[in-house]
Length: 271
View 1 (cartoon, one colour):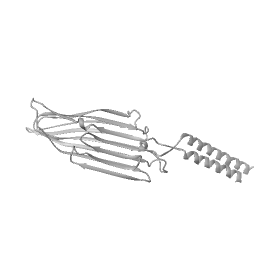
View 2 (view 1 turned 30 degrees about the vertical axis):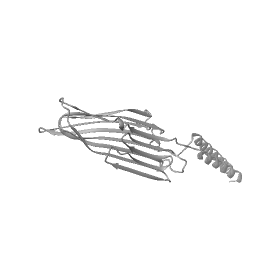
View 3 (view 1 turned 45 degrees about the vertical axis):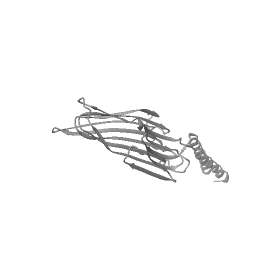
View 4 (view 1 turned 90 degrees about the vertical axis):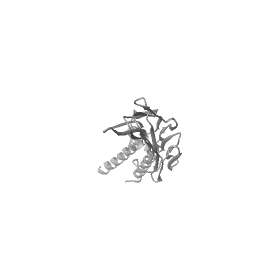
């Protein structure tokens, strides 16, 4: 191969490399879920005109958060406390753009996660990620027949994420449930209900935000016990280097030119 041909191939190779290096950075992905705990309402009505006595006990709040950035590190945190009135939080931050936070107080109960792809040289399959979650619950007991109803406002929101791309996705979900079990007069009875909502960028039809009320409860045919549970979760992933369409076009053009040069060289050698 002569010096001219070598020089041409070198120039084309550098051009291809420069084109591929002009990669886009994925937009911020954020996910947030929150419960307006200050508006939590628990009501009890009687089934036979007499309102039963209801006793609540063993409240607990559990929080966790996790953040990860390839080649930079990860962080995980968790908190657990047996109280609904205390203010606690679990935070994790791998970089200034990738973090997770879950918090609880007498006024709110929330989880959020944010991540952004950057220009670090890591695999498409190994990307920044963040997630946070929380659980709140308590036990209760009835001394007679009645109905317990729970109502509380919630909000879910998402930004970023691609459709049908697990590695660049955001999601937010909330689930609340109540269950009850009792035994009386040689018989048993139970009741269960739940309310759940979730958003995900993975599915194109999912909206970016949603708010409303969680409404659920139990029917007690007699004395017994049960529990209330609230679960929230937010997660976000960020894809790093994603070549622009123009970069792929430059790559194909460069490969085509290199192939042409090699073909001409072969023809001259065979002549």
